[in-house]
Length: 245
Image 1 (tube, rainbow, N blue to C red):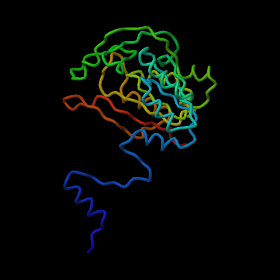
Image 2 (image 1 turned 60 degrees about the horizontal axis):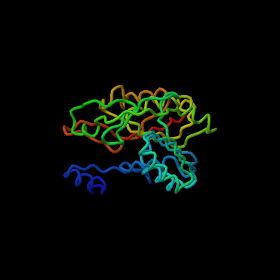
Image 3 (image 1 turned 90 degrees about the vertical axis):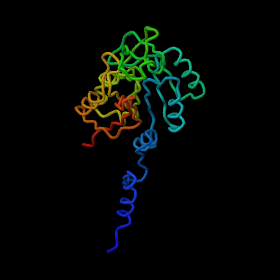
Image 4 (image 1 turned 180 degrees about the horizontal axis):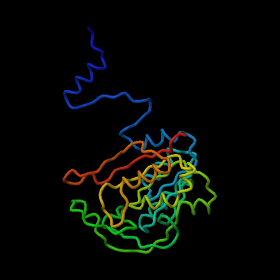
């Protein structure tokens, strides 16, 4: 009896701890950027990036989606200056010097040793080696908006891709866009998700996923997993999509 080539290959690679699987054409299980772009398609006109930092991903989104306007939110002054420099080279990037949460206002922003780890929430010790990057060095006041209010003021009806890297504020950001989510006017959500309580009062993966599940969005996949020194999963990135009715 002839052994199916695929089965034979699977058995061979299984000896080394690998599992082969056939994917649909174009699927990327290890490249979150390529998978985002595959899922949203070519007709991308509006991208929101919350927590744009120095614009490193902002420029990539603008380059890969040549018809899209990228609204990039960054509250930290030193990062916003770098983001603005990126925007000067690309008119389709709209830099917004604000944090995003569930409602408009002014809030304290906790600046950490690693600027990209700064948050609307104060950092807490986890016993992890990365704690040294989370040490609070300063607190500044920043302007805060919600996605619903921003869209209302700008006349934006739909968001093709929403990216969030907001250090534990992701659930509040989603709550500030609830009607957009309920009406499925956000085509794809790509978000950092925390598996550890890295900040006081921050949201975690299970809370974000449960909230979106109630609003009829599903988890598509998880990427870029980061662990602490004991192997505990600390944070990752996740793609969520609206369920098809």
